[in-house]
Each structure stands twice: as C-alpha cells, then as structure tokens.
Image (cartoon, rainbow over all chains, first blue to last red; front, side, top):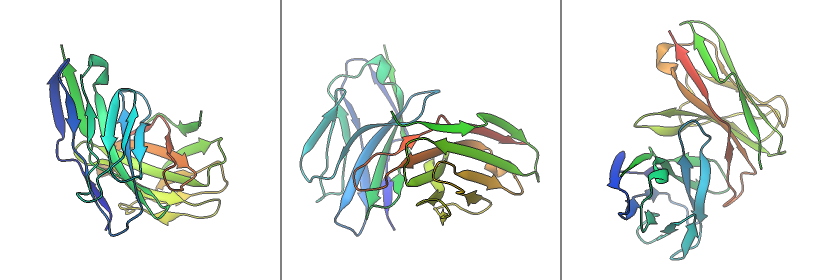
Length: 112
Length: 113
C-alpha cells in the first residue's frame, strides 16, 4: 500500500547549521502529491510546503524541498537552523485525490 | 483561514466507558479526517469522510466508530474505551483534491484510566 518513511525520529542541531530531514515514499501511482507539515507544541499541525512536480524545488519560510520521483524522495532542507525551527515535522503523501498519509514524524531540536 | 474546532480539548475517561470526540469545520470542505498522534507512529488515520452521511475506515479503525451527520460535523466514537486508546486525537478537513492541504484542529488529549 501507500506509505511514507521518515527514518529519523529525533534530530538535534546547533543553531546555524544546515537542516536536512529525510522523507521517502512508496506508491504504485504516478500522480503522487507530497507535503511537509510542521507541528509546533500546543498548536495545530500546519502545511509548510508541497509539491507534485518532479525535480522542481519548492520553497517556503526558508525551507525547501525537491520531489524526486526516480528515488521516491522529498527531503526537507534549510541552509541555517534557527531556534524557532524546533518542532515536529511530518512528511505526507496523497495519491488519487484520496486521503493524506503521514510518516512517523521527525522531532527537530535546535540548540544554541 | 480554515477553522476546525475540536471538543473537548482534554478528556479523562474510564476503561469501558463511551467517549465521543467532536469536530466542527466552517469551511465547507467535503473531506474530514480523524487521526491519532503517538510518539514513534506519527499521525495515523482512523476514519475519514467524503461528505455528510459517509464514513470510511482508515488504517487503524478497530475500536473506533465515526459519524458525519452534516457537512460541518464529524465525530469519533469510542464505544468501549481502553487504555491503549490514550492518545492525542486530531481532526482535519480539506477539499481532498490533488495538492490541496488539510487543515487541522488543535487536538484532543484523551486519557483512558
């Protein structure tokens, strides 16, 4: 079935270092839509960025990701981590205009 | 801004009791979803709905029922609550098409003792 894998459960970084959170997905369908959601403590999860176009970089709020259908990946990156980036990050997949399937999430902690 | 409201925000229930979690959205979205969030498992889909009167099973429906009496409201029902259902539950709504996003409520923290 359709699924999303986020291998890192916890990532701890020093402020100013680059961020890379991994996301791979599995689906038999070619029309995959990929999303990154961010969940700050005591708030609702919200959309960070999304893509359905192969090999096109998408950016929002300093983060960027590129959907690579050849490797079924949609890694989230940022050039320089900030303390305020500390949150739970979810990668998600939608195929065939159906439900949104989430990965297990990566908790990012940025330290001074 | 899409609005999804969940109630209650916190609930303590006894084992074997019935629990109803409510969700209301004011954005006229066709699709609504119930997820539970657990460390190490992320957001897992319990039930979803395509519109009033429809409910569909997600990945982990056992022990849960859902009800969608109207476009705006979607409830999650635990007929016989168990401690394993202690979790944070999120309701979400969205148009359900392509790359459109879903909008989440603030969550309900349920503790079954």
